[in-house]
Image (cartoon, rainbow, N blue to C red; front, side, top):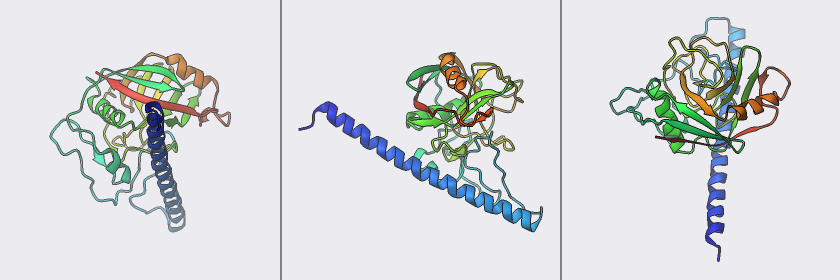
Length: 264
């Protein structure tokens, strides 16, 4: 008969295998979307410039589930409240649902990055909808065992980008929401902010970036937290550089986000 610990390990393994299967399916959908986008660009080049509804994804964006303007309006959070989360019509939405329109606040988030904790003070008073989304996704273990897929190391941009379960740069939770706390925003070391599509201020999803060195960005990215402990963990990842030696790309070594938990 299996011991209690053996049974726990077996259940944990089963949950992990199911999670990996879901992520593989999500990655396959992302690849299909990219193929469709490439085909659309070919049509655009052949047919001329007058093509309506084309959405162009930017590598910086973390463009969560970009869709064309031809898609029918998607539902938003049903309950009355200050936050509007708009479903993008992907299967992921069915798995995670929409966050409540009246968000649950949290004071801190702790990321376990490569086995080491990074503590973040959450700015729930200034970015309540963003923090509410993070709390919602963290409660579903959405970020657990994912990969931080992008690192920048230029003189003006020093960030590690995480929060995409597909690690493709275009994955997301199947819903989007708008900017918060951007007026006069700056991005010094320790800032935690949302990544989004460069041309769409309403495209916040699940991807976020950790600023490990003072960075120069326009005030167009929602600041929702500050790293209070563990900045050296992120800096150590940055010190290894990118896989191709450029100033913007995948980290040289895979960076695992073991888990993300929030607390009051």
